[in-house]
Image (cartoon, rainbow over all chains, first blue to last red; front, side, top):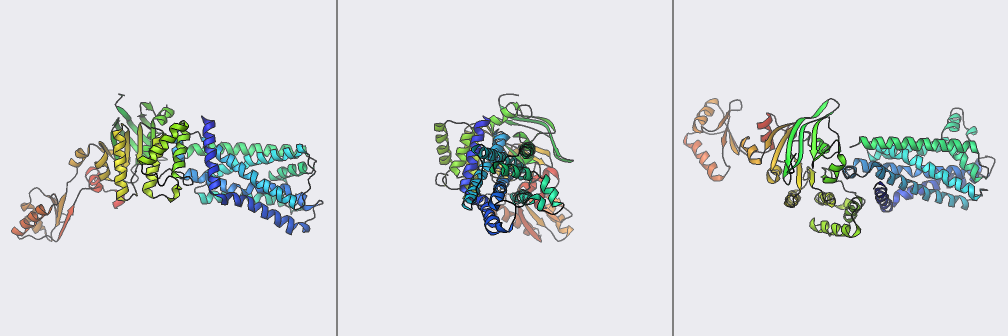
Length: 248
Length: 313
């Protein structure tokens, strides 16, 4: 029953995405613009030891995931603040089904944005040395990140009082990549910011993808990255569940 | 618990923090009837619906809906009920037809049954033309109709309608009333909340008046009306002497000494009004102010609780 309800909810969310292409367009366009800005316009000014497009692409992939979250938070909040959620509750639709539908829609948006960024990267001269296995690792990392970011965003979206503030709730997740090794290596940053960048979850995630794309995966980074993602996903899931229960 | 009782509530209590919203209410709803919970904003109507429909847990008392305890057996209750809230619970990004299809899918109807159900409901609620349009373009009345249609997909035995006509224009209101009457004719039990006395009067077999979390009266519309002042004419005089004289002329009137006013029962028809004015004339009395009152929710409240509704303050 739960499984088929999840499918119904997923179909509903896909219809929403198709009806409101602006949100998908934004989620895809912004990372591509960032990519062009940093790599094509500013790229020559950064000296990071390797071709800048090769350095920046993993960070841009992460950015592509984060930009999709605003619409997820808003969509979840709209569901919760309008009457429709009570209808689902009274119909005994499991909380799992409603939320799973949103997570999968969010991850799907991520996949489209990531695909677009990778396409643009290649057009800008991206030349990874990743094997097929490394690419699968990158894909796995992105899906895991998408799930983690998706669950925490859904919880934030439910926590917010209105769709407008829900959109704001995702802003930290959009800002955080800039304070990581996405654009420049952490060791080039000022004190304080450097330590923050070194220890925040996005840095090991980016370093893991960077290693995989360069064909030289780093196990330590990967373990930390996976641990962060699993922890965030779990925390987001549990928080979302308890919020769903509370909000009548 | 007999088979003819659809809902039975006893000692229901609910508080938010230390604000008591429902302070021990009791009532029973007979299967196949319309029961109306009448009260002003903030009386606790929506909270009652939320508890009865399993959306909220009670702090005390027992609630049985369709023979099942709402706390112990919420699943069985949910299978038997449908709820249409105060704010239309439709998906605005979907069309009317897609909204109904969503309910069909969630209720697990077969494809053929689902298709027929959707077509029937669109037809019945006069939404065939609008079926392909996004519900965000619907009027308030159309939304409520779609909302109710969505509730009916699951074929509920008991339907909760929380202020189904609040904010609707008079025509949509009457359409909604006739839909509700048809539902009961099909054997459905309706639990209706409203802040309109007229609505409860028009529809309900039994009415319970809720005020500040307590039921202050229960009965048929006629029983309740006997407890409140009927249509009357209010005459305000300039002096106490005039009031005394007038009170002598109309022995069945009620005096309001503070306001120097007299409340004379009347049916508000022109014939009886003329007779009343003629009698004033005969005794050379003239009122400073003359007004006709028909009983409304405020009168019910004034009579039953001694205070007026929040809305009129």
